[in-house]
Length: 224
Length: 139
Ligand SMILES: Nc1nc2c(ncn2[C@@H]2O[C@H](COP(=O)(O)OP(=O)(O)O)[C@@H](O)[C@H]2O)c(=O)[nH]1
Ligand SMILES: [Mg+2]
Ligand SMILES: [Zn+2]
Image (cartoon, rainbow over all chains, first blue to last red; front, side):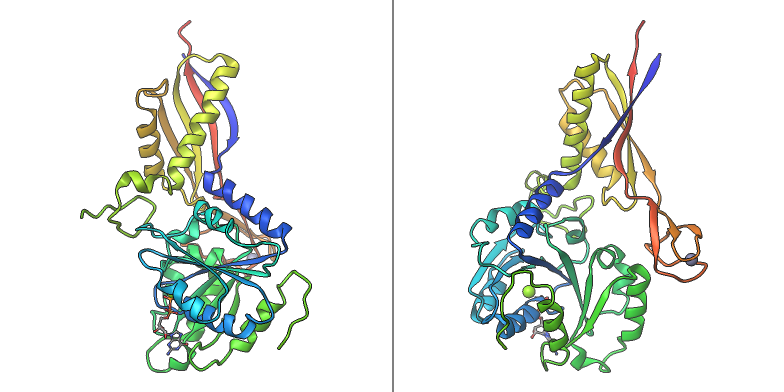
């Protein structure tokens, strides 16, 4: 006779366990961490370059640049003035995972870091399932992409706290409908912060930088 | 190079299945199922486990087929080789904090269909746990 044995066991993955450790470590060191996700080419590296250029003198910014094959983005971030940049070449994997972050985190001096930026692999699907221990995910969408991205990849927009619409300098050159994107993004995630900017012209960057500075935890005077 | 599509990952990769397995949720979850059940079997001195029933919410990011695939792969030649992993999928339901309306969520649309509020609380669909085991008592 079959007999049923109740067993209320919550299952967590190794990734979630490691991510929780990373999160605790970052919080102990008062580091605010962001995980940047988007399709390839939306402007993750460009936004990080601009951010380093604007805040790199007053804040200590750690950068992790994930890529399937190359270290190009890490090199761009170093050239932009990034002092602590580590590449992660995934060798084919379409997302970063917490184990990879744990490995490179030991190379940073956490005592001094204010911010940690992680550029994920360009992909709107898989990265949403892998918690890296960040405070928030920032999802980028650019005006040269289809404006149905939120509806096609709801998981990513649901799990992000901020949506950055980049390349607003190109608005009007395609049928990308900004209001439609915002409306759909809010249907999936009512709490999403939405910022519009152009890494090319610098429009809207101030709002982004202010948003970021408000979240720095370590008590430091900000030098303009 | 052969292209392999991993369940749960949308992008084909030239990497071998073996290398990719360690970055997958489903393998890690299959392992934690076995650890939990193994512990319970030892603790209660249970007879052979015929079925393990796991509840997987649609928001849990677990691909049921991939979970079963990994479970079967790692239980070969173990005491769970004959054990069937049964997945009960749980769909997403929510409750509107503004008007109290209860509704099912489809296509990850998290707005209240009645009052359009975004203040909705997910009441089911996030679960990922073992519900129960079934064992065969021969006496
Ligand atoms: N017109 C325009 N081009 C941009 C803007 N931001 C980035 N780009 C360009 O878009 C391309 C991809 O940007 P990149 O930062 O490498 O994207 P990533 O793949 O998300 O890191 C590059 O050629 C950038 O110069 C923008 O605001 N306006
Ligand atoms: Mg990049
Ligand atoms: Zn309502």
